[in-house]
Amino acid sequence: MEPIPDTSFYFYLGYAVILGGMALYVLSLFYRWKKLRQAWEELDELSRLEEY
Amino acid sequence: MPTKRPLALRLLWVLSLILILAALAMMWFYAPMERTMGVVQKIFYFHVAANWLGMLSFAVAAVMAILHLATRNPRWIHLEVAAVEIGWAFSLIGVISGSIWARPIWNTWWTADPRLNTVAIMVLLYTAYLVLRQVMEEPEKRDRFSSVYAIIAFVTVPLAFLSARLYRTIHPTVIGSSSSVASGGFAMAPAMRTTMFFALFAFTVLYVTLLWERYRLEVAYQELAKAKSEL
Image (cartoon, rainbow over all chains, first blue to last red; front, side, top):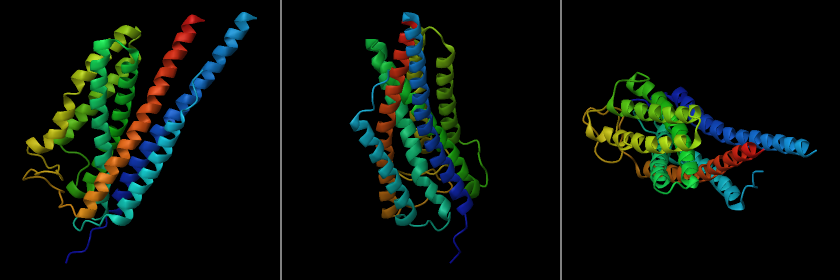
């Protein structure tokens, strides 16, 4: 019986890309929420200044 | 200001995380090792699931595009944009992971093959969708254009899916009959099949979560743009 080939490098590389890519996308969503909240705060500040 | 994340969405995030971790554990501990390819074959479970999520998302985007063109309700365009972005990200993950799997099996990262080429065209077309939305300024025209584009671009999805079944391709088909020149195909043991379907289920739950989250973000962007224009 032939031995099972050692392809573990490509296995780890593949899962690093898959899980890393998924994590990156999820993090990008939360980062965009953070930037959006900052933009709202700046807008609130601006409207307060305008009222003043 | 953006509203607080609903409880159901928070629970979906937790459930998605648990399911993805369970799918990883099944891939690692439960699914058997394939003898000719070795451990790299285990990329299959998440590679297929990522591509499934991508194609499902493009189909959802096409339906949302039709609804948007028919009703002009902004809800549908927000969902369409969310679906295209998620589909694009996961299709790209599918393409890159497939290329990594191909390297030790086909001895090349990429080859001119009907399946590989149609998937690459699909990803490039949806990349153009995202770029075009960024450069078009007039909102109404942009939304109308992107809905028409999402419907036309969807043609590439069934083409990419069926390419491994219709043409002479070295890309294997694990469900249904494979081409005679397919390379890297394997007979699925029951445990492999169970793991694959569990991974597909986990990614589908993750998709619902991501779509809801991205939709909320899109709505919040539009509300901010409206508030800015009113100031």
